Length: 139
Image (cartoon, rainbow, N blue to C red; front, side, top):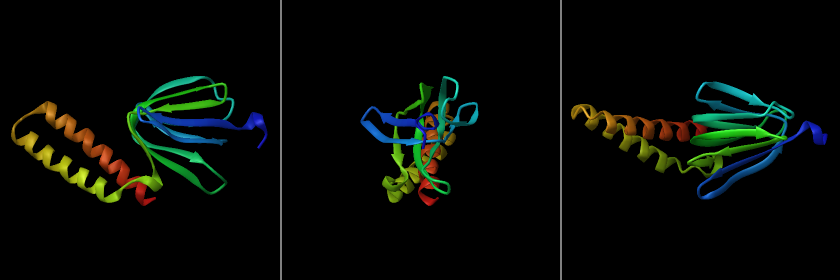
């Protein structure tokens, strides 16, 4: 690829770097919708939704990274994804994600029975994170 037609992507969490690569397309879901970022895109700063970041590696394949919110910043052909948690598809522990899903579902029921809105919202976020990880692991 021509140097002007590539961008560098870095995905980091508080625990360190999760992913780094060069590409000509990254697709991610922000809190206001899905965006595709290509080289020479206008500078951007956006909040990320609990979803996946897809990085094009060739004409038919994408690397997939599960992210649990955070933000994305793009400038000078460098895309930085800063997430509270992120996992590459191949490192997702499916049984752990299944257990997290079951725990979250149980916590949702308990919170509903107790009319506890705060615990309900927290459990719903945990459930979305677990489902996101499971969905990405199955692609």
